[in-house]
Every structure is written in structure tokens, then in C-alpha cells.
Length: 307
Ligand SMILES: Cc1[nH+]cc(COP(=O)(O)O)c(CN[C@@H](CCC(=O)O)C(=O)O)c1O
Image (cartoon, helix red, strand yellow):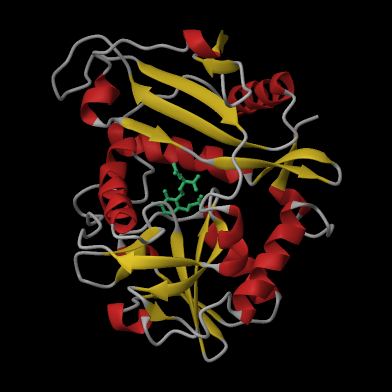
């Protein structure tokens, strides 16, 4: 296949890419009843290593809980399967997509007698929003679609069905010539991107919406908070950010396993700062990449070496 990957792990078996099929009456396909993760394996100075794998797997199991979904594999089994999958593909770096979902038995909203199935796929994935986005930043628009409230669907459970909201917001942005959306919550404050958390810099201090703002508790968000504090910055990680604060920000950036640290240079064509990657954004981005490429020995506990 075009992604130069030939194997997927499904329910304990390594399956050829083209045989990795499921029944069309799979519960998760009809009702969005799946939970998933997105993690990166980096080609570090000491060989391929998965970044914060423990936290990603922990979140997968946490995400399954609201749906009473029983994942029948242990953390160790899923870790061994993932490492074996990466070794088989001989990929120095890759994106890792674990997925657990209600499978095929009967339909109806209740998944009562549907099996829980688990799959893990890996593939090469470069800069999520484009290579030059990391350096030059991107233009975003504030979506007309609001984020679902955490009282309506547990926004901290990385649920497949939630991503129709992400798709609606992201496609609206791209249809209008922007690279990505920023999504407000039902209170009209900043929540996050369709697939990213949002950070704001003002007067040398860093802000990011708190977990009660209907956002995903991002692992890269957590990483960036720790790196920024270790760099000596004050980080306010439990605030509400109003829509207007996006325009008066000195700097804005997205974080995510796929997005990594992506500067935002315009919001609805309002220039942020001087319209390029902000200086503090650049410093944090550089530190992030130094850490994930293991150009520093610090934070070694964040790495699960594949070999
Ligand atoms: C809604 C949302 N918010 C925040 C984040 C950042 O979370 P974290 O990766 O733990 O720092 C992600 C990850 N989005 C994943 C899926 C992207 C996709 O296109 O699919 C990702 O970055 O892998 C989200 O989907």
C-alpha cells in the first residue's frame, strides 16, 4: 500500500494490511462507539522510541470506561504488540493508532452483546499540518460549530464519535481557505482545535484552557506545560480564555501528538503578534523537538524504546 506498511494488529493477531477488514454492521461504525489513541514513535539518537506511551495507553483504558468497554488485553500485551508491529515495519519513526471499539453481533444502540475489539496500526506521518507550518505557523478560523459540552459527551474520553464535531469544524475552516479551526465551547470560550490543544502567550506568560473547558486532557499539552515551567515560564493551565483574547494574544500555538507544536499566525485574518512564529513558541517548540529526538538526557522516563 502507499503508506509502505503491510501489517496491522487485530485482536491478538498480525494481519496483512489488505485483510484488516471488519463487518459492515459493526456497532462502532454505526454509532461512533470506539475509543482511540494517537502517539508518535520518534527516531531518537538511541533508536526508535515511543513518546509517553504509558500515558497514551492509560488514557485509552480511561476512555473506554464511560462506555463500559472491556479491553481484553493488558498494557504489557498491547505494548509488546505495538513494539513488534513497529519492528516488523522497520519504520524508524511512525504514528501509532490504537483503537478499541464495539464490534459486530447485533445492531441497536445498546452494544449489550457486541464484542469489544482492539486494533493497532502504525504508519509514517510527517508534520500534521504541513512541514512549513511548524516554522511559519498557520492561519486558523474560529469555527461556527461549538464543541460538545463535557456534560453531553465525556470530552476527556478520546471517542471516535466525537470527531464528527472535529470534522465539521476543520472542514469548515479549510473550505474557507484556512488550515485549521479553533473551536469554542458552549459558553463561547476557547476550547481547543479539532485535533489539538490551544496555548496563548501574553506579556511573557503562558495560558491554556483548563480541563473543565470541554477539552481533551492532551498529553502534549501536559508535556508543554512541564517543559515551559522548566524553562522558567509561568503557565496558567486552568483558565477560561475568551474569544476576544485570541486577537490580543502576543502568540498562539497548537499542541498534539500529531500537531506537535504548531504556531498560529492569524485568527480569522487578524494577525497574531508579528504574523510569524512567536519567540516563546519557538523556544518551546525547539525544546520539544530536542526532547523527543533525545538531544537531551532529560525526561528519559517519557520514552519507551522499541528495540
Ligand atoms: C480533540 C483533541 N484535542 C487535543 C488533542 C491533543 O492531545 P495529545 O495528542 O494527547 O497531545 C487531540 C489529539 N489528536 C490526535 C488525533 C489526530 C487525528 O487527526 O486523528 C493526535 O494528535 O494524534 C485531539 O484529538
